[in-house]
Image 1 (cartoon, rainbow, N blue to C red):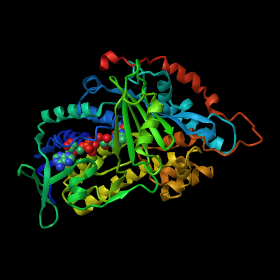
Image 2 (cartoon, protein in one colour):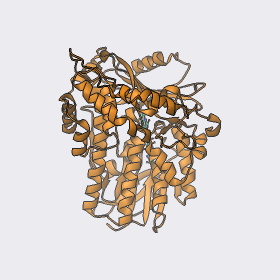
Image 3 (cartoon, rainbow, N blue to C red):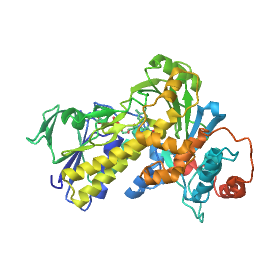
Length: 496
Ligand SMILES: Cc1cc2nc3c(=O)[nH]c(=O)nc-3n(C[C@H](O)[C@H](O)[C@H](O)COP(=O)(O)OP(=O)(O)OC[C@H]3O[C@@H](n4cnc5c(N)ncnc54)[C@H](O)[C@@H]3O)c2cc1C
């Protein structure tokens, strides 16, 4: 296949409009026409309100400032995630997985050394919250925007209203010259070689191009339904397949973290926006009915029936066998989904578009190049999946069959088994990850946050020689408290 001159994006959810913007921007120097088809009769999934710091790069690349887009999308800053109730038997009520900032280069090593010391049975500080600066911002509820003269870059992501973000991205893409057609695709025609040729809408209009991007959500209209690329579910080790969503009022002062609380058969998110709080319960219908899930979420939120509307959703968790097949690339829910525990979906969309654009610019459109792309993206999905799976595998809850079954589940990938083995044997996890090229979005410090946050340690040794605690030796508490003096609450006026 040669470098395409007309790309059709099917679907106008967040994935479709992100793709439209990045393609228009990154391929601006190339003679390529971009058309996005979306159906006003088919709703977007309407959830997906938390991001990783990768979204910051997305806006930066497009030249859009926080001040320009955050008010339009009722967005707030996110410095990480607070996990509550995932590992109660370890004596840990909650822990934080903050985004790792440049400032943490000072404390990441002491954190990992202390974790190693604790794995030898010595009693040292290992709570991730103590070692990583964004945790301090999260606890204080402070904005991560860096004050003038503060010498370190602070990483952050966002919370946002998904519908407003879609609308914002649409306007921006249209300004960049992306064509937009409102239509419902009904059928697709293929070339004799099996590649896509033309999409036909319900009014009989034909839409032809030489490359197609499937952003039609869970239905996967082009890649899965038309080109019959198989979908590989992750159900063996990610049990959750349903969600129930209820919005509540915005707090007077929104927190700067996503909160993730373990419930009886899954977990609930709490995402603070400027105009409301997004809440949802992600669960498995093998363990809980939709009614029971809604009741439990209402109890958790202290919201009575009738006070706030609940929306029930199904989730298709897994990934397609080939993300790029012939002249079709799938993005967003059409390429796969790993449940929303670490809010990585848009991160994977962005990664996929960037990788595709690199191929486009180099003119790499051979089967081998598509294979290399697929291997890379599938690896990224697998790495994220393993990190999420570990949250379930390592839980120490005993209150339901759901948690016990998750803990007893041995259907883990080989890399995850090896990683846990490295940890339990007290070996060097950072070196292990480096050797195995597992440096995905979740690096060694993120893994340490998870494992230490869960208290995945052996019992303490009878003899405690003392003097090995790098947290106190490096006076990290004093250092972080000093840094914190430079920050303050989010200035909501400037962002909304
Ligand atoms: C419970 C839940 C929580 C989530 N939380 C997060 C999160 O915190 N962070 C995160 O990054 N992600 C999250 N996600 C994922 C996130 O919602 C999606 O990745 C994101 O919204 C992109 O969706 P999409 O654009 O792929 O699909 P959709 O939003 O479903 O859009 C599909 C588009 O395709 C169009 N379409 C479909 N069929 C046709 C047709 N026949 N003709 C024309 N157009 C058609 C529709 O009109 C629509 O525009 C979550 C998902 C779920 C289910």
